[in-house]
Image (cartoon, rainbow, N blue to C red; front, side):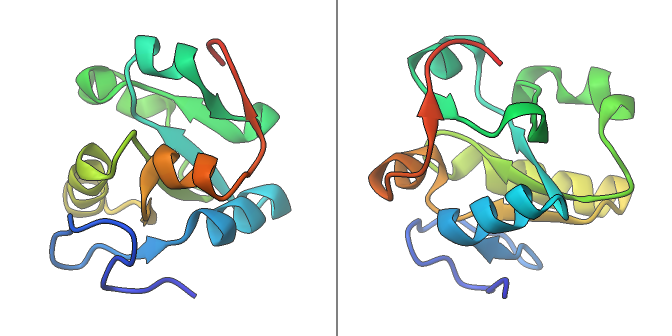
Length: 123
């Protein structure tokens, strides 16, 4: 299901796998994965995926200090605003911590464009 070359964004690193927002939604909804939102609080306030407790919000700037709070028993689908930070985070987590991580291609921008469930405010 995951693909190597992003469709919606131009940003990628070697070994980074991508999912479309629709595919990510289905996998997260099924409980096979959780969504890791690495945007800053101010970005999340403007809009966020509505996925209940299946989302973890850790801004990229805080990730190194909060790495122990990430689940290791599920895949992590990483999302940012436009796709730059999420690719960096996926590469970092896969290489340094050997976590099962996948980039959500197109980021929150595509999530909204595909009319997937959203809310406003912090998680």
